[in-house]
Every structure is written in structure tokens, then in C-alpha cells.
View 1: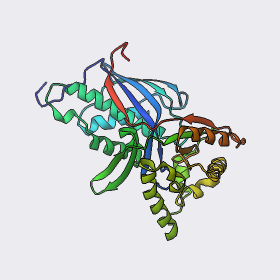
View 2: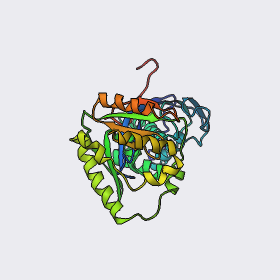
View 3: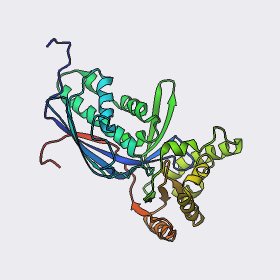
View 4: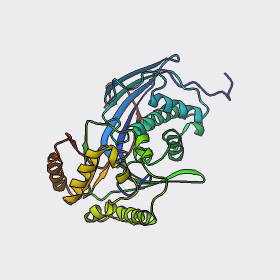
Length: 325
């Protein structure tokens, strides 16, 4: 093998990946704001000595996701290997999915980020000590690759970096800014049994909106940043929205009903991502318990209340050895 040829990824190496759920939009911040939450998908990826792809999935989506190279995690790994001119090895993927699928909690974004981080970990293990800086996939490249796969950066940015993220596109590609959330912000997510397609939800929105609605959302988005990082008492006012939630309400009547009921009771409730889950940004642990009591009174749809924290770390990858924790 010539010195210019890349060394094959070592066989039998395993990396462990952990990626948080995310909630995008947060009311007014449509396609811009995202929050990482303390629910995690985990996977182990081991390189094989041939081109096989072996997949084992437990938990969410175990009987619904493909078990071949079309699996989103595997496709994301292949995309990362190709981006640095490397051939992806065969892999054994063991996935433990906890993030609900099709509920507006960033499950597809988490899968994309999981695959990219797995590839990053394997490539960096491969290049350890070699001085080959091209094997390292940095944060900017990770966000670019994730956005190429997901189509927009609002979920993948917090999944990668944690915390509250502002994401935007410019002439050089996707960008992000991570912010730390005030410790008084206490999220609770109400998850129904029903699902919602992101593409269907997006199809319900108009191409143009009234000027006053645009101004309303600009003001609330600015206020929301202040509320989340400094002044949680402003969260109810800051989570008002006129750009997307009302238009999607027809497809999610029970979600719309719960959001309106909670907001009428003084809680900062919004549709989580494309829905149908509902996110409440409470200004303290006691307040989210009260929100759960209100949600329990909306009996047409059973809601699973997830009392969560803001994840500040984002996705992680590390080399795994049998028996390690």
C-alpha cells in the first residue's frame, strides 16, 4: 500500500455514541431555535472485517426502521466517511432508541448526528498518533454534514452541541450559536400516542404571512432569548407565535387544545417541533408539576409527561471497551 493511500479503518474497533432529543421552534423561533433535552438515543458501532451491515435496534422504532444500509444512522456514517475521502467499513450497529419517533422531538436529527459522531469517532481512532489532521471532523464540518442530511439545522445543532442554539444559514453554510439556559427553566414534554409527519406539518403553512404576524414573531423571538437565559418569568409572553402553530392546528386538534388550555392557565406551552408533542417551558420544578395536573384534565388524548432537564453537553462519542461504563 502506498504512503498516499488511506489506511483502512481498524477492524473490531467500537465507539459508543449518545445523542439528546431536541425541541425546535420553541414557539416563535421557527426553523431557528432549538433546545437539547435529557432524553437520549445510544448506540454502539463496531467495525467488521467485510462489507456487512448488521443492525440491532431496541426501544423506539424497533419494528419500523430498516435493518440494512438504508438505515439513517448508517447513511449518515457513509456520508461522513465520503466527506473525508474514506471508504466506510462494514459495521455492526446496536441502537437503543429512547427518543420517541414522529413526535416532534428530533428523532431523525438524533439519528443523523449519531451516525456522524460514530464516523467521527472511528476516523479519529484510526488517525490517532498519525498526524493526519484530515481524519478529524470538526464542529463546523459536523454541522454542515448534518444539515445536508437533515435539510435544516434547527434540530441537529442542539443535538450536536447541547443547550439552546440559534441556527442560521449564510453564504458559507449553516451556522450556530450555543447559549446556556437559566437554571430556573424546567422543561416538561407531553407526548401523545399519535405521530405527525414533518413534511405534512410544513405543507400546511402558507408561503406568505401578514406583516404584523412577522413583526410579532420577531419581537417574541428576541424576547424568548432573554427569557431563556436571564428572565424565565417572561416565558409565557415570549413563546407567542403566529407563523406556524395556528396553521398546523387542523392536523393536530388535541395538541392545539392542550397548548391553548395550558397557555390559558399561564404556562409557556408550545408545539414541540412539528408536533404532536407539547413542550412547556416552566419557570421552576413546581410549576411543571402544576402543568402536568392541567394536562391530565385534557382527557381525550392520553399524554405521557416527561419531566426533563436541558442537556448542556450535546452528542458525545468515545471509544468503547467491553465492560466499560
